[in-house]
Length: 432
Image (cartoon, rainbow, N blue to C red):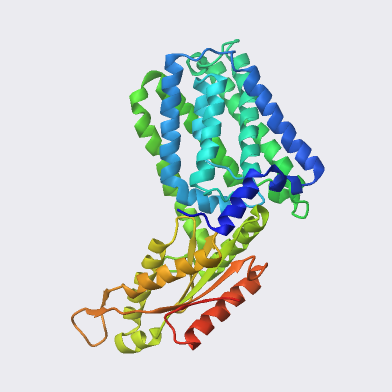
């Protein structure tokens, strides 16, 4: 596999410390971030030999990592949408379930490893390495710091015992200690993250950085479920698969409908509707600018779609639109965004894609559309009628080559689409 020129530039930028986006932040913010990260390293080093790593702790460690990976893999789609919606606010995630369970059971060095693996896994699989890396590093270090503070509470509350803490939490004192540790874990991490958000977003109201009450409740719920997992693992570890299913069911059953409603999906195609797709595009453009990356936009129009409506009826046209929508989702990556742009037009947002790569994707989509065969229920016809031989015209534009702002970028892609239709249809036109 050959790395594109754009991809090579991004990789070289990532390897060159001078090109890291963290240095573009105000100097006090950089000092604050580096201080938190240095403190986390000191904590890990200081606690490395405090608690011995036993066979039992290694077994628990492996089980917790397996649970975390399984959970995040199953829920990474909704986590991607949640993370986009949290721009400028703390992103509360259910990884805290596994981190807090690790805090209650494992020696501090293994807790740190769980945190690092968890954040690395999410950066690669959820954010597909397009998240701002220094943010993820800072978040992991703030969680390590919060765990160390919560560990002090647990040590004091259990009369000086060290990990594993769960076997020593009993009775009223144990409940108070557990609540205190959970509150400390949340508040220390929350305060550190809110401080850096306010410092890096001075134009936003301070209350925006505090997030929503529902997000705070998510972390509190995660702490509670994590405590339950730690308890079960000490007495009935074979029940862990059941508990893995519990947070996943909560996340999919409660959060997914919430974000589907927030996303305002198109009723006919189940794709993002135009307003939400545009909002996602705006946020991804900000992200591309921060990462010194690229962003591709495709506007896709089904050629002669009106003929389908006129010949077969609007219900048949809706079935064709749904078939095209399914094809578009199948032809793009999990981190790309497909939306209904209006009528028979669709829009695709491709973070990290530009130039010849963008053309290749567009042509692959056109070829896939040409292979669509769908049986429709046509007007004045009792039996289903097949429709095939569809073609599409596509306009393509990319940041930063075509335009640096979203509106000019969309206008350029739209103009390129008209150029494709006016010069014969069934082709891709790249914006100049």
